[in-house]
Length: 352
Image (cartoon, rainbow, N blue to C red):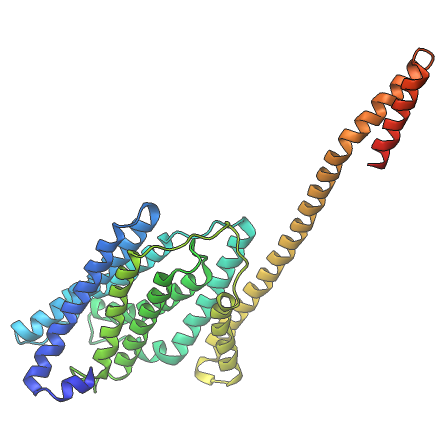
């Protein structure tokens, strides 16, 4: 992206960067929303909602380009572009929550929830330490609306990172759902680009490598629309053991948080300590849930074994009891030959 812009004139670079954004982003949003209607049920509305969220971002890009290219004036802040940008975050998050997933029992649902919450707390604390603390600011000269927009943008990036954790720990109903993988990549790329933009706001230029990162994120959303039309294989059963990488995603963030706590950053010590305490509580709760789950599993297996043994014993014991009772009550009336057959049957059933 940057190489292409380097060989263009300044005016061509200006037009290419400011028209490329809305074109690619709007195409990505509409392709994803349209592809959702090739699905059925809950998946249709989930991916359609995500497509709507991407389209809101696209409308923000279009408004930005309209002010820059057509009106040739500075984009108002906050303005309608910011409304569409900020609105896209919760819409995409709602779509992620609506995504269908493999059914799980109450213990597995609770474990997945604890994993996601622990990872979310760790990501939030890390985000605050690394860039939120320096980029969320209140200025007495700013209006109330401007102050809140300053907060919503970086918080929206944290929400996106939390959504990635939710995607990682939830089980897809397909053996391998490439759409979820690409969606996670697109969300991470977008969040990273926003963070870089916050840190390089004063030095940002149109047509730079950062624009290429943004366009890569929008292109990934368009790829999801293509993947949505491809057939996928369902899982064989409702239960699958968790994969190592699914457990590693939230707890990698926790490990990073603990590493930061060892760095003894005085300015953020209270944040790190508070977040680490919450994470420790959640980890202990998760272990308690696992212990309770294993205990109930053992009890269920024991009950199933007793029921199975009882069922297997019922038929031979019925025969033994019936023939023994017959011989006891009518011994003198039963012919000797039949007595031998009945005793042989009792012996055979007892061995069985």
